[in-house]
Image 1 (spheres, helix red, strand yellow):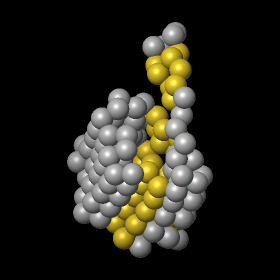
Image 2 (cartoon, one colour):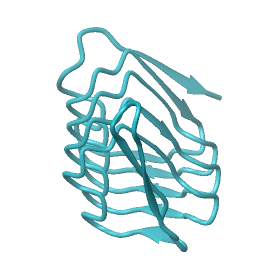
Image 3 (cartoon, one colour):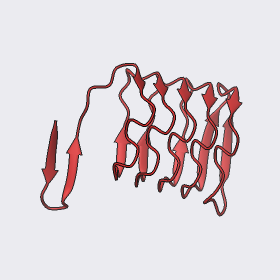
Image 4 (tube, helix red, strand yellow):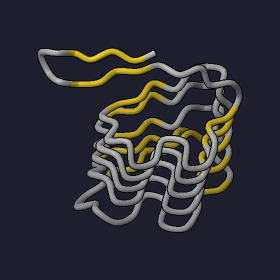
Length: 127
């Protein structure tokens, strides 16, 4: 279902997503923000790459974040939920990150997952 916010000329849509967001699912869609439903356990490779995301809510049901999943966006901060165990290569690369919170449930972080486009970043590990 989609609707247009006429005041801001923003198109808003909702899609039914079951347990995973497929590879390339929302790549190059000019998305500004996204709320991922609690039913999702996996975010595929390149799923939200090259959008204009300034905000993303990742639920506690997600276990893995694919490579380049959120690359090339405008995210300033990211909180990885306790359920996540792996973060793929370049997942959050080329954003505007200044703060990342990573729980101790994360066992693997891919190559340059939080690299590029970062002037100064504070990474918090929850132990």
